[in-house]
Image 1 (cartoon, rainbow, N blue to C red):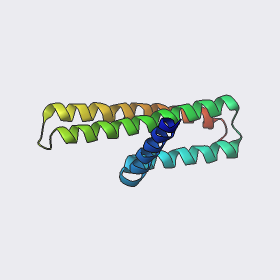
Image 2 (image 1 turned 60 degrees about the vertical axis):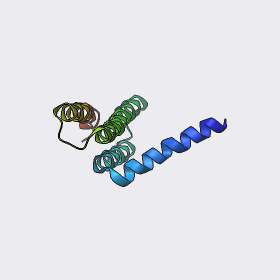
Image 3 (image 1 turned 120 degrees about the vertical axis):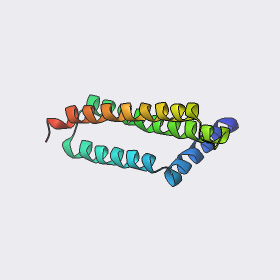
Length: 114
């Protein structure tokens, strides 16, 4: 059990680091707060809540993974490197793709209430 709580502590430390240093993570978190407020205001259904929260978790998790990949690449080299650039670009693309689909899903869910 001690190892479990230690792992949770490390994960929470990672979240705090993301909040402190990553602008895009803050933007995604702000979007989540807006969506939660909208969901509460419009009284969306349980299924809609599940979809909204799942998609939000996907976007925020991908942002965290993207940040980890960028940090790892920066450890490898600080010199310009085409392969590192491609790796970072693809990781960022994953976040962008999920974000676009999250907006589309939000439009489907909240569109009928607006």
